[in-house]
Length: 353
Image 1 (tube, rainbow, N blue to C red):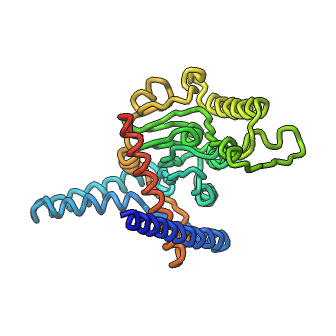
Image 2: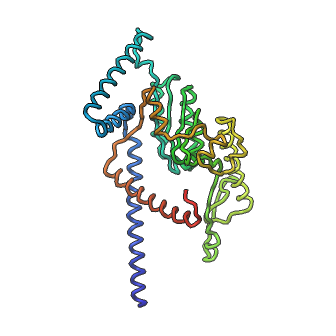
Image 3: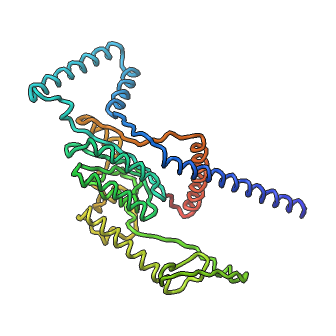
């Protein structure tokens, strides 16, 4: 029995080793493909969402209406278009009606801890700024739980380029814009959120395990050499001093002040001390606090906009190689596993985020 357990333990250890090795290989492939993509030239793709909405409506009409009803619908539509063109010529006979129509440029940002899409976002903004004017509008469909301070600071700065050009700017949040995600959202002139989306979390957090006691137990020394009193404040393996911990907390507080100042500058109507506690709220609650201006899904917002404007979705795309696809497949698999683990832990406390 003991031998059987030993063999099983050895088999399990080998299996874990193989899995880790595979993940390392895939991680290396993903890393190399990412470095290659920085040198590759992608392309900006533009999709006219008005046509997409019209195609959806036409498909539904074909499925629901009779042939006679479809003919009547087609006649009514042609008559409407003719009357609109006639009215446009009367009001502005020497102008092109399409040139005066408002345009809405739509961006997407689905952020991770490193705000990995910020490079593509910057390219998309550069592209739309070549065409957009103060008569148009930019809408970003934003989803992010936040992450690294410097990465989301850059993402927010990219969005500020739109505001600097005086182009009306709207942020739509369907699921979550927390911490760094809300830092990005607050740059917009208007924030539109779904009722059960999560917003806020205006705070700063850092978690650091320390294994120094374990190392001491096994007589393992870990030396840290620095030049400058606060070059290294706290470490995972070294012994953390009271002074080092205090300095680390001071740096967190300083970052929090910068975060609060940015939110206050962009949304001066907020009671910043009330909302900058690190808490998050659902959309309806966030509206009451002033974190959000309107409750609506991005789908509804864009569909309504398409009735009076040309809506264009802009995305920067790079063609993926086989190595890219393999690397990202491994990354997604690891992410799904971590997400399931976090969900299981959270559900034990009756809360799932």
